[in-house]
Length: 442
Ligand code: GUN
Ligand code: ZN
Image (cartoon, rainbow, N blue to C red; front, side):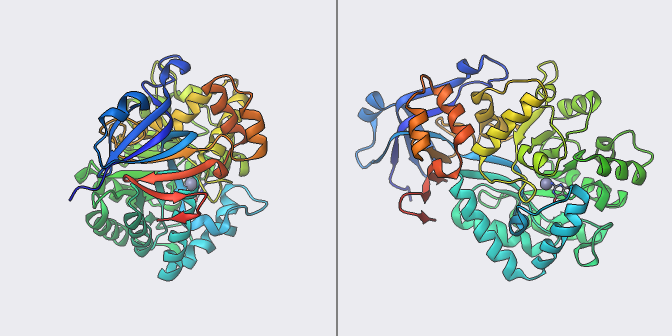
């Protein structure tokens, strides 16, 4: 049975092209008084309210968001839900931080109730920041995937998640074996991949915690399932890179460790990729693999500055999306992440335009995941995942945005000063799943 149609009224903002391929101001499609018509989880129409209003089905409910922006829901291409309890943990860089904070937190997921509670809290936080799709690491425990994707299915969000594979260099309680990891992943793929909106990612944590045999097994899984995702970490930290060199002396680079196992392919998502060169960028370009830029995490752990504009070099552009990388990241908000991406870009000598930042958090992220025809854009035929952004969420934002002379300036102020307080509502699968002012969640 068809659900009654709903139309959202506000300032619709989306992309007609990539702001890295055309001038940023020309990439934006802005409807100052727009309507977005939703039905059965899809966007049916989007355009000027003045003309669209005439054509609405008679039973359409209209929800007016005033001067708030109606954008595609945010897409987070790299995040760890089990690390929510250790966000903001002091004093360490990557490898020591994993040992001291992350592994104990993930070990607690042996208890399925902890997995369920954390999944619920994490999904609530995602809706609060306007994120409707994320590529999510679970723990080594298969039930950590069930807990997370069951909660996503209940809400109706489109999530990508996977069981972490680790068969060495991790505490006993967090290690699987090549066979156990393969079998669990296979079972989870059958249970979840393409089950409603849920998708699966084969998830070897990184080269340090998997034997070459486990990476090969991950490659075997993916060869039979080209539609399944793969996510891992790449070249985040110099000590990590040195350890990988020692563990894989025959491989020509960190990326080559994964490539050798068949893990560099469309729907592969490599987190960080800070310390990589031209060869790696070329290889990602030609294979369709994606990089996830995680600026708040890279600053928090002192990992380094991702070379975004080198990755996106138009001669061989690499697919890139933004990631929050909680618990090393310091906010689940994509507005915050966009703001920090601007600062990291400046550190590498480039000016990230607000439209470019928003693209990396929506349509560009979707494209990086090979979901660019499905999510990330406000246009007919796309899935109805939306985020409503309030330019007057705080007194300072009101004061500053009143002075904005263009949508691009407004976007830049939002990404510099804004965070979850600006998210007035989140829509997923055509339903309102979060409303800030009534504090209601799906
Ligand atoms: N490298 C391997 N595991 C992790 C992790 O959990 N977080 C981050 N930031 N890097 C990693
Ligand atoms: Zn990570």
